[in-house]
Image (cartoon, rainbow, N blue to C red; front, side, top):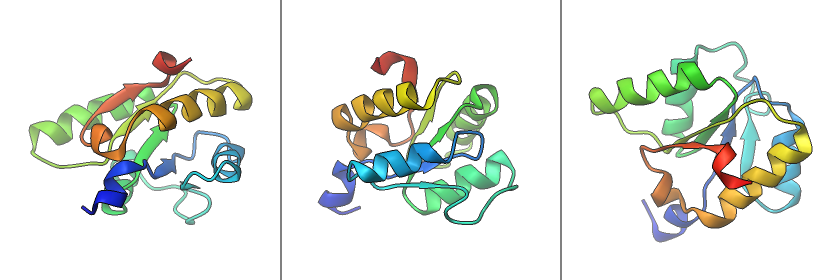
Length: 122
């Protein structure tokens, strides 16, 4: 991983999060794509995490239970991912606000193989 890619989190938004979240982050110059942008709707949670990991992107989802389970399963099996951010469903503005707080405080390197709760970034 290059020094540049280890600095900034590149976000991959799961399909359960509103489409406008990625667009709002891009307006603020963050690298954020949605499942809809890359035309990968309908894949399993495991396949979405695998896609995000292959692209070096941190996955953001409201599907906390499934992705917490996947996170620990991947760690147990020695699989690597670029991080997972989970959250309760929030209004779009609040979601973007908290994501901006997280993206401005953490590096991609700090997110490697980690799971973070968006509620910690009010």
